[in-house]
Length: 164
Image (cartoon, rainbow, N blue to C red; front, top):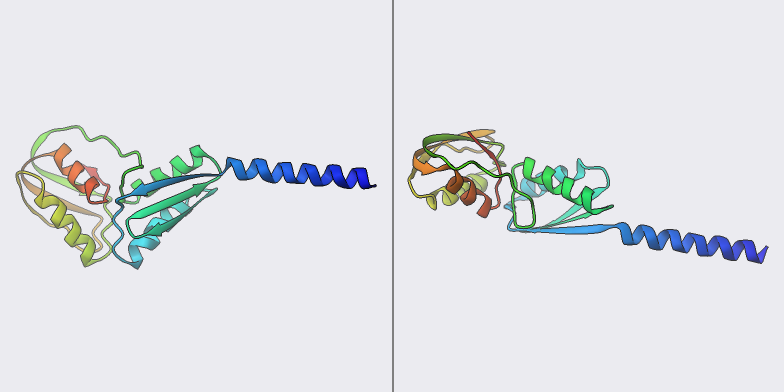
């Protein structure tokens, strides 16, 4: 009986040790997170991926997942929800010189989000105006600018979106 109990205990400990080693974390820095709605959006985006969870501490998002592939899927879900940061794989944008572009999918839950987007766009040479508003699912950018520079400025400010 003692031998069976000892073997069972050892197997249980090994199982726990191996499952603990399989867990991985991914830290993404520079994520736009100005309010409780942003934080909720971040956590909800990651939570959509089974086996992943997140902690958002200001501009740092730490994703904990069952394995590396799941962590990467959770980071992709975060980007798809309109957030960006260092440590997340961001979509590449074909560079084109344009007079206007529509940006969609950027997280714009509050006036602080809009203000952050406005500030980011001021760093893009040639941008003259945009019509981003609280709660918008897309906004238009006008001027004479590069789409790659637009994407880069948004990403640097912690946002992700689709540019057309």
